[in-house]
Amino acid sequence: MILTKIVKDAQAGLMPDILAHWYSIIVARTKALLPVELKDKISVEQDEYLPMKFKLNISRRAVPILLSVIDESIKEMPYSTRMYFETVYNLIVKEYNNTVIQ
Image 1 (tube, rainbow, N blue to C red):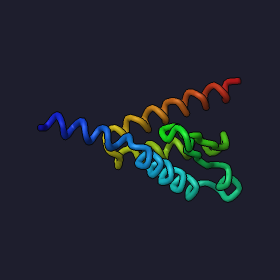
Image 2: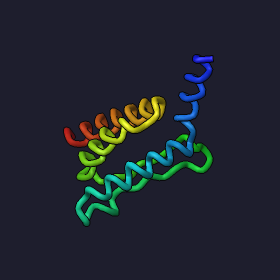
Image 3: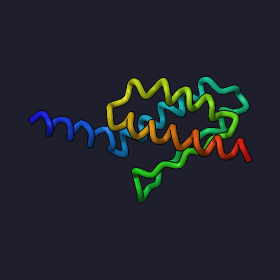
Image 4: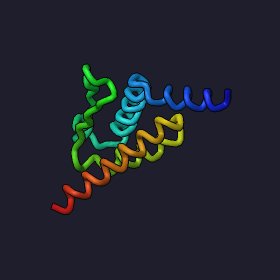
C-alpha cells in the first residue's frame, strides 16, 4: 500500500499539465523580477504532439534570474516534479556556461 502511494505520487508529479503549470509559475515569477526590457524575452512552449516536451525561450541576460526562481520554486513542488526541474536547472546551467565561455 505505501509503495503504491509513492508510485502514484511520483507519476502524478510528472503529468504534462502539472509540468506546464509549474513552467507557467516559474515564467510568471521570473517576469516579475526582470527589468521591463527583458519581460518579453522569456516564454515556454509545450509541444502539442509530445506533451512532455517543452521549449524554453529565454534571453541570456535573464538566465540568472530564471535559475534563482527555479531554485526557490523547487521547494514547493512534489518530489518527481522537483527532480524534473532540478534536471532542467542543471541543463540550463550547462548550456549557459557553454555559451558564456565561447
